[in-house]
Image (tube, rainbow, N blue to C red):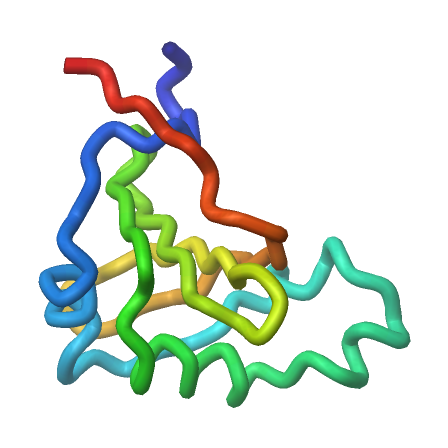
Length: 109
């Protein structure tokens, strides 16, 4: 296992994960939109991602080996996976991706 792997190592209860975000400023990394084309960038707004994190409870949330968190939020069609870097005073949405279904993740014990 590499030092900076994104592999999930621990599942978090969705409400507990949401509590991690409470009372913290949420920012979106400038790199969060790097993987989508310019037409899609017109559709996706930073505010939409921030409001999703602030208002919704994810269906699944995981701590990754690199110390970041992945959370899956239900959409009309599929899920939106957000990757968070949670600091003491603020949270950064590092990136996001839309996926058709929740992944089947088996955690090592």
